[in-house]
Image 1: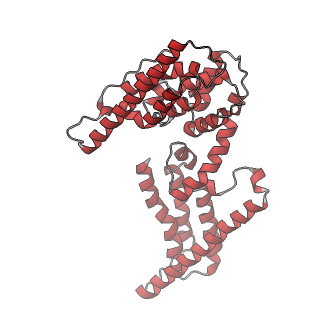
Image 2 (image 1 turned 45 degrees about the vertical axis):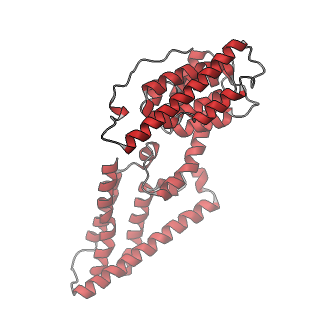
Amino acid sequence: MLTRMRLLKGATAFLYIGPLFAGMGEFGWGLVGPFTAIFVVWLMILRPEQWPSTPREWLTGSAWLAALAQVLSQVALVAVLFGIGRGIGAVAGVVPVVNPVLPLSISFLAIPLCRMLWDAREAADLGFFLDEEAEAAHRPRAAAEAGVAVTPLLNLPDDAPDARVMADVARILGGANGEVRLKALAAALASPLRSHAALRRAVVLWATEPEVIAPGRIPHAAATAFAIAEGNPDLLRLFVPRALALIQAFPFRAQGFPTAARLRHAAAAGMTGDPNADLPTHLRDDLCDGLRALARAVDAALAREAEAQANPVAVEAPAAESMPTTKISAA
């Protein structure tokens, strides 16, 4: 993807060469309109986040104003390039005699080339953006789409079969924008008025699978699972042993786990947050010990990572170790 971004910059050069060449040829300002149309189409393809995405959005006044601003900015850009081209031609004393279709064709060539090199939607799903402005424009739309995507999960009944809930969770959270969808779902489950027992259990199990943790595509999956399980002894009994196994297998993913301080705080607070939990006292104590053990494991993994960064030659990178692929059974 990074290679594509570099090639994209070269392909974009054709877009600007066209009006520069037209300016050098002293073509009339009547070509500003066609060049503007090419620039706008290129902008729609490369930066779709800056334009309304649905017919309903196009019906709003704010969308029309935003689109008009985009078009006017392209008119101004083409005019500036025309002026620069004329200046270059005057200084160099060269006035190329060409058909006006040639500079238009040069600019138009940038559209198919850039489209072949860059799919803005696909790149955004993978976390790649042309610049910070594109990333900022993508966030609200991605959040809205994530909210819609996780709504079917929130509508599942509490007594839904575990197999069905797990399949739905893996399908919806395992696709594109999985991290954003997981955050949206965690925010919805943060409400104490929502039960969703089967859904909470499925999310904790899914987010602590080796297939989710190892690639790092959803970097804070384990921390989100803990946020959902925190204060619920039954969910923590699922989370703690799985997290302990994961931090030992993939210590280089420790940044995505809950912090050691938060784990120790949960252990110190005890397991009295859920009034419906009937876990015996000795099992609650064991669970608190497990939280403390996980906190120590997180600290150790982070210390090893810091040592590896400080001495990259002396310490072998954990990523070079073979990664186990066996699933962790639920407690």
